[in-house]
Length: 127
Image (tube, rainbow, N blue to C red; front, side, top):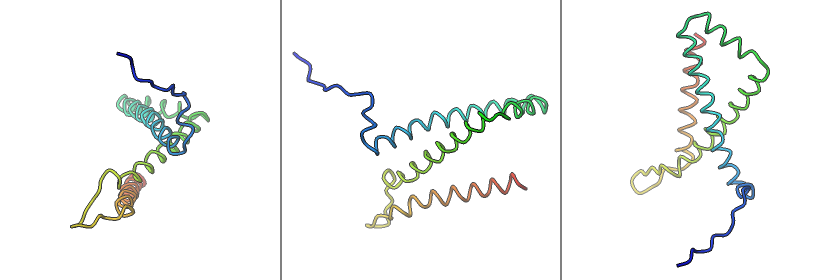
């Protein structure tokens, strides 16, 4: 029995379509978010070791390359959040009786919740 023909797939297949490119960027963004989570875990570990260790860790971040890294992480985190918030109405269809809740309300509730939590955390940290 012979195998069915499978046409060759170029490594840059995802570059041919904007939707595929956005999908690949969203997937790549998870790597940067994970790296930032590791950085936060390292920071928490240093806080547990005392004020001197924490200060040393913070001083190690005083580098232009870390600033660039954090700008890139922020951009990827925003891309990740925005694309997932916009996908929510497609994966979580909410119905009120026979009618479907509009996509803008489902996605918008995520943005509102994110804004409320962000403002609350800002108020706690600033206070």
